[in-house]
Length: 187
Length: 183
Image 1: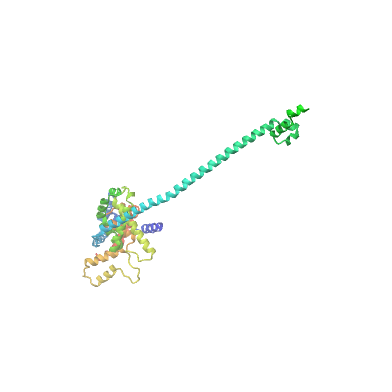
Image 2 (image 1 turned 30 degrees about the vertical axis):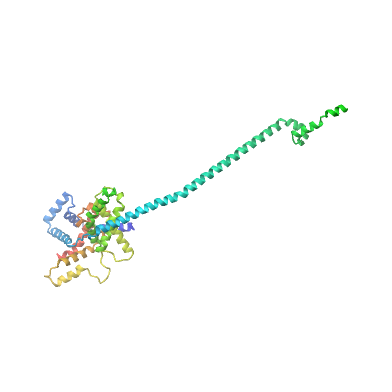
């Protein structure tokens, strides 16, 4: 939209403005560099048509003085300042509301953040517990395995030993196999 | 304005008092409506207030102020044309409408010795100004009534000096054409 506006403005400007008239107007407006102004002055001295044209431009320009130039009404200043005060108060209220809103918005987030931190701490504690218990179990398994490895030749030589559940059983069998002192005397 | 930027409300009041007549006059020449021109001037001051913290003293304050005013007037005109309202400050689009200066010229031709009174002259001139395009009218008002240079007008309207020169040349050519017969 702004481009369209600029284009129409550009078209309006690019239209055929007579260069001599443009220069004459710029001279009348005091907008020509000194050298160009002197040249136009020379032309005005010699060219009566250009002189008449300049006078006509000047007189029509002076006619614009007849337009009324209204002044702001008596209440304008007060009305303007009152409306600006209202806007300022509104923006202050908006700012205060934004601050309150940001506090409200931050409150649940802080709670969520705290909860999240506690959850994470719990998770890591559980993970650490699990890890430690696994390490302890694997240590125990390693000890048992080491014992088996140590007696592996024996196990291989006597496959039946695999059937023996544990050492306690052997001890029991050994104890039972020993003759009681009373029985020896009887023999 | 620097005091206003720093939040000095007294300085802002002084600024309003100093520029209110100039702004009201600028908008009046553009829209030809007393109530609308005060509303627009008020809106301009409101915009100045809202953007006071962004103000940088790179150009004259009046240039900055009138740039805001010019943008506001342009937006208003574009908004009005989008709503298909009668454009502010332009003659109505009635086919039977005859510009007042033409009517008065015909009237004067019937009475050769008759002199136009000041009110009639004012109406004729006002109609001639209204016949200018929006850009031409703005440039004329800024140059004639605000006594701004081509450079300042260019800054306000976002144009180069050559473009302003051309704009004013065409505007004054049109005015001469419309008003010559009353000279």
